[in-house]
Amino acid sequence: MPHLSVPILGLAVAVFVLILLVLRTRVHPLIAMITAACIAGLTGGLSVNATLDAITKGFGATLGTIGIIIGLGVMMGRILEVSGAAEQIAYSFINWLGARKEAWALAMTGYFVSIPIFADSAFVILFPVAKALSKKSHRPVVTMGVALAGGLVVTHTMVPPTPGPLGVAGLFGVDVGAMMVMGMLLAIPCTIAFVLYAQWLGKKHPGSSAETPTDEPLKAIEDTYITEKAARPLPTLTRSLAPIVVPILLIFTKALLTLFPLAASADGSIWYGLLQVILFVGTPIIALCISTLLAVYTLVPYLDRHQTSARLEEGLQSAGIILMVTGAGGALGFVVRETGTGTQLAAQIARLPFSPLMIPFLVATVIRLIQGSGTVAMITAASITAPILTKVPGMNMLFAAQSAVMGSMFFSYFNDSLFWVVNRMMGIVAVNQQIMTWSVPTSISWAVGGILIALINLTFGSGGSLLDPLIPLVGLALIFLVLRRK
Image 1 (spheres, rainbow, N blue to C red):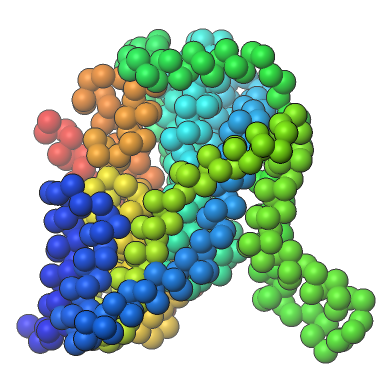
Image 2: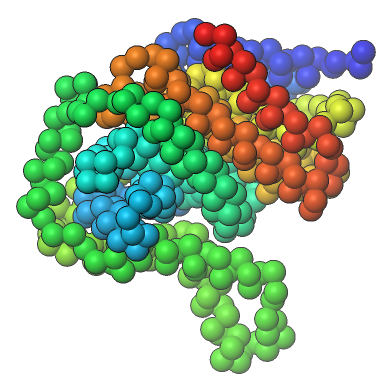
């Protein structure tokens, strides 16, 4: 048995206390993470002052890189919510794909809309569209709802500027543009898995959902939304998509140019000046500033200055606690780096039969199952594992970051707010049907994502193992075995 030093044991205690506080007490994850950081620092050999200094530096450094981007992203998302842009995207995809492809159209809508908008809010906004399509096409509403929610939750989990994956990118120190592009690519097969399951579920249990939500507050939200929608015109598709597409294109262009530096020696030339402009506007902060301005001036021109400020501030209110939890995760990670525990653990992890890449995947999976929040799960997994994986030779940190966000998609159930939003909006009240409707497809998507990132690491990374893809497969098989017995 390998020797475990005091710092490693201290980190184990810190992680145990973190999970215990979140699971069994009313202590908020923010305080739980700060407590874990204090334990890790003091047991890792840092003095009291050094521990507090590391917490402060880690908190500030993390928010210094991603805090502004999170704020801009949620402000833009709020404008997309109130303007009707999300519905216009849904209707356009439906018209484009035609009859009998409604589930795919809703999944595509969710895929794009949830990049800047929180999945819970987006589902409440778009579910009336799914419900109307169900009646018109005579297809089970559960198929429409699960397809829509699947598209929403996948990009919400994997693609910046959603706060969770953005925080993970900051903690692993990877380029936001690279995280965005890879997340969007990996999200496609995960979304396809959701749609295929939704179609199967509609055939297997066509009567598994009621016509109206059984939860009165949700019913009131839907009724109010339908009334407001009838009294307002929707923006055009171009204007609806522009705030989402423009920053993605700008960030992606900059990422390409940094891979292929052009005209580096042509200082002072026109092309060099143009290159600098592109690199500037492709910076995530500037790109999201541009997209927020686009949303304000093209989607809600009817709002005055005070109304616009109020809508933007509503978005910031929803991001406050996420910013704090992300900063606390950065503090915990910085403490682990300062104590040198990461270097010691890296040597231990190298002896495992599977790749270190799967460590953040497994940590995020466990924390997600215990406390429910995907954002907290991926941030916690990143803060614990990032300082360890940086010491592993040849580790691709972009792949590791995607591994952490993939793991946070595991088995959404009672302790996840989206579980209740999806099931209650569709009127599903039986527990077994709720699990089949939402817990199972999130686990399937988790397995698809885990297998994909393991195979990508085997092909393009280093230190991959043939056991890596088997880990999510075994997890999925265990879930199905348990459900069959019940």
